[in-house]
Image (tube, rainbow, N blue to C red; front, side, top):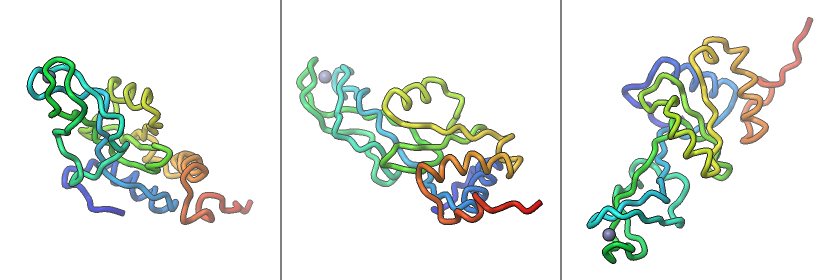
Length: 161
Ligand SMILES: [Zn+2]
């Protein structure tokens, strides 16, 4: 588990505790560069840099980037917009988790639409899901199939009658 944010919501901490219990690893608070929505620093024209990585740690992220010359003015310096995602289960498969109720706003339809259109798989984690650990187990089983688990026995234990 990585470091905790100060403004962590209750449902996010519950979700993290359950994910840890079921052995699902997640990175927290990664930046997703909106590589196709660069904005020229000089004239505001749009640009793109498809070579940007899908995820960056907060300390790796830079709000301005250099890319191929702007169609409007020939400049090469652009503002880089971004999203922060609550949880990242797999960078390779772009499987992420958004916890509803945090200020990063899982309800932002534009954010979810952009992420989906660019090959990310947002798993929306709602308050009521983390309130019931047995319900959340099904989510963790699905995640474990995709990204693995350290504790398969917790997810697929044999229940005795
Ligand atoms: Zn320009």
